Length: 293
Length: 266
Image 1 (cartoon, helix red, strand yellow):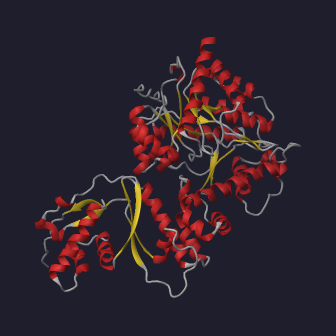
Image 2 (image 1 turned 90 degrees about the horizontal axis):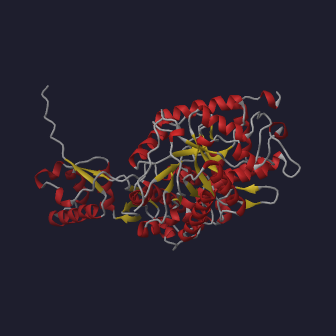
Image 3 (image 1 turned 60 degrees about the vertical axis):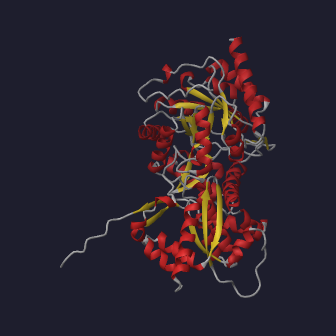
């Protein structure tokens, strides 16, 4: 039996009050091809992550999977369509459904991406990068605060992988991310694969990026694979976590402690046992790093 | 206007245009985005452009699997990309991009049975993801004395369509080319989810009529007129058989008994 979910702190609590983990806690994302196996055998995991949009307002097999997993372990909700940096009004109906689902399953965290993904009332279903400007910063901070108020809980925001940079930017990505989560009193879901992909595509240091982040705001980690297109890396979540991301993970444990960690895999999805092996590896790296410290 | 003076709104609109344009790169990309020798801005934006169209096309293909098989990969891609360009997503869940795909296929003169096949696949998706009903009604819950005035409330995952029967054969993989000869008479088809699986089934004319009537809120006495063939015993037997089938397939959420409205005097 797994431990119960740690409740997300209320908005008026400082994330500094969050206890740091004393040992690795690693899980992976729920994906449709695994549903039958999960319903039959459950998951071998410390916690699980559900893509919010795959469960909002749904019944049937999806909801049975979520209920089954939630009866065994904590579940985090991770969205892709909030468009926190977008210009379209925040979708309040979406936020209300998300808040309801989070309450219903006592989600231990609710996260989405620091990007925009809506335009003129339409959804891109992609994670488009923001310009890192003062105007964008103020815009995003205000929307994060409104979303958190609507949800009644703190949001975690994930750094995205990107392939372009705006000439108008006057912050580095690490500065912008840090300012947003600090000013909005949000948490950071640090995707180490995204850091590596963006660092490679734009020519900055992933290590310096990690060191520039506010330690107390980093609350969760994502690990994933990418593919090499020659001139750039693509964040496709279609392969094992590569060595360079594992090295960043060890470094992040040194910097931020043992944080709840998710293995993400979307393309060319393997059997659950492969994900379990990746999670085992993350646990052992994290625990070894904690011993060294 | 210089790129430094562009507002957040202008930058986002510019990015969205570049990422969703079906007609090649926008001018001035290099003034808005950084380039490198290894990867110019044009190629960087092209990554987002390809991802936008092919992610949505993949979402369509995952819903309209049999439609794609019948149309063929290249024709499905041609129609799908054209559809996505004209019908951007309006919903946070990506598979909802397919909501108007059957109508779009009809508008571009796709054979009728393929349009209906797409409609069937869309209904199957809707049934798959529909919310769970708060309850499932049991046949035994019917109160015989109030039966005539009862109305039926159906579960959210039940859909009723009117289709060319060739669409059903095409779904089953029996028909993949345009059927020869006269078009077949259209039939009623029920699509529903039972436990975790989605099913569909064609309905004989009386059941289709009765179901349409019940879905529109008619009382059971009215619904049962669909089985009136002038042979009372046989008509009642058939009505009972059909209604029992609706309960057995878990199509019914509840039975609603309403008080008779007192007649008002003028």
